[in-house]
Length: 207
Image (tube, rainbow, N blue to C red; front, side):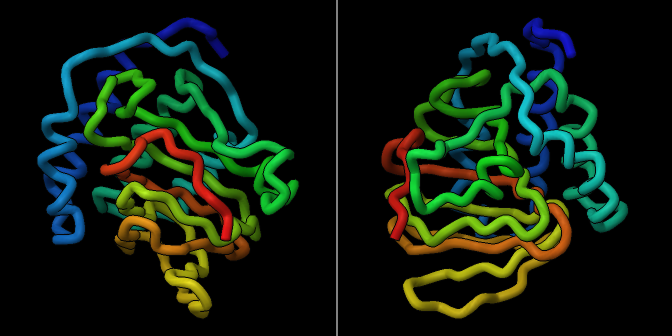
């Protein structure tokens, strides 16, 4: 894998992301569309970093619904995965997070405070989780949207709420400070996420 910054790949993913949000039919995205369309104008190069979770992308592509916007966006990220900066929000010091998540979880951002396309308004990217990984209940000040691109998980939305199965194509709106968590099924999960409001780099608090 090349360790060089690939601005052309960044631009391809930005274009695909902007088009996906603009064309998505679900009204839950309406409150985010202006921030995404007017994210800013600055770019900064970020050298790629590999995580094990990124290796699951090609496998997960087969789980998308064919001829959908989710499949098209996933395909872009699969093709550009080696040029991405993959990261995690948590470490082994976060006792609520299990080894399963630390091994088989990662995300890559395309728009946000740290780039590659710099924005103080909105954060956008994809997250990848391995089969049967548990993401413990947590919350944060930012409002969040998840769109499931591939796979499925049992989501818990609200303190004490029971699990609800969500699958490819589903859109989940998470208001500020709503407690939420989810457990993957026997297949990997890929989500497209949007954040706005609050500190776009806030570390979630476990509940």
